[in-house]
Image (cartoon, rainbow, N blue to C red; front, side):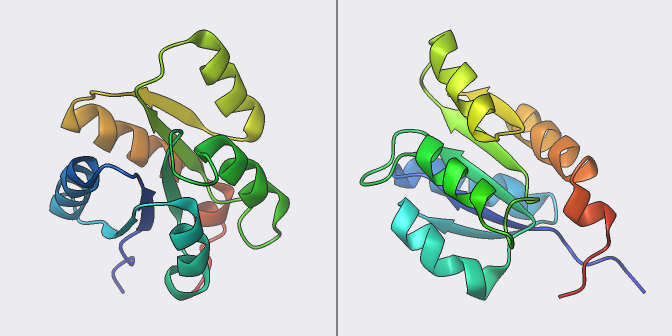
Amino acid sequence: MAKAAARILAVDDDPRVRRFVTRALRGAGYDVVAVPDAESAIAQLLASRPDLFLLDINLPGMNGIILTQRLQQQRGTRQVPVVILSVRTDPRDKVAAYASGAMTYLEKPFKTQDLLDAVRLALEFSPRRAEGRGR
């Protein structure tokens, strides 16, 4: 039986970034749900049961760092890897992202291949995928 495509929940307030990420990841065979803010992401959790989160830091309402912290505190999402996508280049932002539980940090703008590599590696080293969880 073929392995199911990894499901990715992408959260970015910029519709151009959401379209770019969605197109790139779907083109690589991933199942993608893209939403504009943390509240929409939280609402999608039960429906989409993602294997990976792609989060912007600068989100309306709750930012990506706080969302990452909340995801890490929840039993159902603590083992789901988080990849941060951000225009912020200050090392303190990167430290905060990693301290909150993010697996990696991509600075915008990024190349499609960098996104695909970050996603592939995050999924490869995800304890949740390694356990072969069923849907």
